[in-house]
Image 1 (cartoon, rainbow, N blue to C red):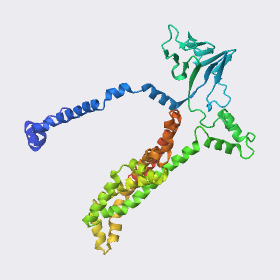
Image 2 (image 1 turned 90 degrees about the vertical axis):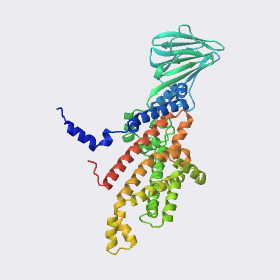
Image 3 (image 1 turned 120 degrees about the horizontal axis):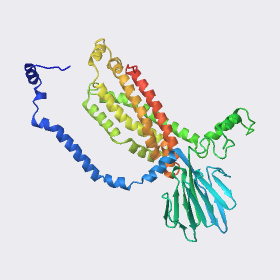
Length: 446
């Protein structure tokens, strides 16, 4: 439906809302000036931070490998050419156990065959020659005394550098052929040995076999039940260290809770000193607000470094860092809330002859307590994430465990495991915090 207004009505609206219809040239140009300024800044930042150089120089293939290691694992056997024989070797702490015999490696006489997902993608290793099968096509790599030779017409997945031939089989893995050995990286989906390590009697067994042993099988250890042995083996898994991870995660949770609790408890009375309408001393107001500024102006990470040097690595340093930072922030928020309370309630309590302390107790605290508790809960939930970061600098908790796994450069599946645990904890605490805050401020969430 087309709505028409009369000319008189249009004139009346223009006169009534002159600031809307009669903008100055500067007001009309302001949106264009702001847009141009933002665009100019973005162009400046692009060249100042050399974004193009960073993108072009980034090692995207390495990033892809890291991401792949989050959701998969590798077995890394190698074939060494020794005298007139080929020796198959595995790493000292192979995820395949002490006596590995994987089905994807077979031997026929003096020839070893390694398959990568299917028979069309494989290699056959023998003295002086490695036969490569890529999508069914056959390529022979000759091994000389000094180098491995890339065959003519080699597949695009094959390359040669410094006398070494590399073959890529996609996600399934890759191979490096040298004159002295053939190294294999064989990749599989999932996390290897997540429940039991090779030292466990449950290792290598299917889920059905494990459950059967736990509830109906003969005792594997005469000193404890099979169920107890299974949980013990799981928690003390040498490769995943579940118990240590859980303890460190609990430390992180305790750090966040205790640090926030202490900060909220201390900030509560100090906020009354900082509030101008509660404490009438300008000097006290000014000094307390500057104290809050000092505590919160130093980042939590810096406080964590300071307390790590003072107390040594551990949760105490993390608790202290959270306590100091949040005391300043909560104190500022609390004092500002106090300065905006309704004075009518205070006057009503004062009119019945209440003491100054009772005026604050019954005229002020009921107004601000739900808000104070809501803010403290939000900081508790936020500090659960922050405690992970400060833990990485030595303040204890799972952050330190996470950093240790990242430093090895090979335990990215462990990194993925801990990140998932942290996310789950944050999600749970976020839900709890939101629920409690909605109840405190009188909102049932509907």
